[in-house]
Image 1 (cartoon, each protein chain N blue to C red):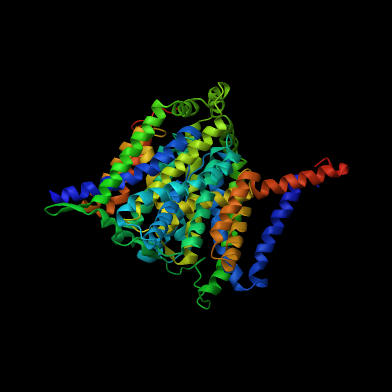
Image 2: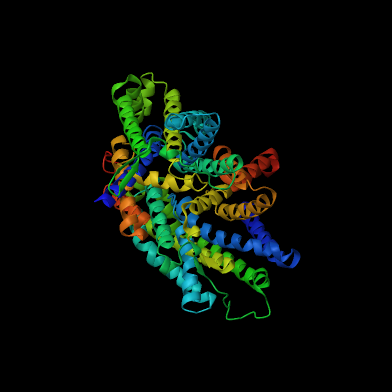
Length: 328
Length: 293
């Protein structure tokens, strides 16, 4: 089997398996997977910036926070309890915030880009944390229950809503976000950002508008982050400053590297692995951070291309062992 | 007036500790080009161990006046974690800087649980030992002599580091390696050893800073992830890789924090990040750094 249909098959199987979770597994697991969807959406966008454009942001949790706070403002303060409006508002807010910040940040690359984004992230954190009368400080802002697709789902309690209709809603959202990103990275824009990642100077000579494209990638990834943040906020019911803390940004990078940033599906794999792993570890030991740290260290040292890279390498090795299948 | 002096001394004390940790971050970045997020963890480690060692020494009948030497000893002893961690980091030398950053982030995660495992989840603090050296007061203005001693110790450390880097042969080797690693290596510098020494020194500065701060404030699990960000601000403002920059940056950050706490508390941290961002945008090499390509 050649590569493209195989990948399509795997993706279809993955989506089918996810679709079966609410019917086969107890609501706990469906509920657990909501953050996975949220992180998947956020990381699919994040990887456009990190994997494809080569810019490592260490402040990207800011946009997840922005999405959650947008939900709190639209649904909580303004009382518009329609999730679609919240998503729209989160995306708009992300564009409005990411344009000026991105404009300033993309003047640098490498470690300076990372430091600048980290500083902006902590700026946002200290704003949310300290301006108590505006943002609720460390207790955050409540996010009320919302209608999805215009339906109230009165008969469901919060858990049933999350494990049922909202689960499928998020699954759909993730697939949609993935499809859109697939189009984006396979468009001329996607090719250009990869070119400017590998050799910015040469790309510029060839007419690639390096800064504009970096900025565009930054803004798109911010929008994805805010959408993910809105999903996360819907589930937790609270937007609090910890969402924006630099360690949360670190976790985003962690998931991406765990899955593999050089592969399109790597971030999704990373989000799923870390979500399940963290849940398991937390039920086993209170020292789960240590285990996660050790896993991260091992990934960085031994498998810098992440789980997806590992899978591709293993598949390649297996294929080579059978001479008849060399064509793959 | 005395209120003003209180604020200034509070800020300078904070700056003294901040300088130690930031100098460690600076040294490691300057020579090894690694942003070591774990330097805040070293700081926390020094703090927790300092408390344990002081408590143990007090039980063993230590005269309270020995507080400072015991704390310095605690800082120096905990620097033993430096060499093994440097050994771990060796696996990512010369690789992508995002991987280096992530490995130090992994260390941050692990350290947090190591500290939780040894000292438990609750914050720890010393009693009134800070007053062992008495207080200086003039009118409303009081400052524990201990704080002045720490400021003096940080200044002494700054002078020592400066002397070491500028006047000793090994310091010159360090600077040569920072400048041009492959050329230094070609001229016979054992870069491996240099890296090990630099990282251990960086660790020492972090643990020392943590040990010295505990008589005045509690040690908690969050202190690592909070302090590293402040040290990072110092380094950016002062200029990456510059020791003079670390000193001035620490003073700036310490004083800004102290004053904004009094004048406009909401601005405490915000002000620092605004300056960090302004520095990165206007002069990314910082106040004392050289131009960055």
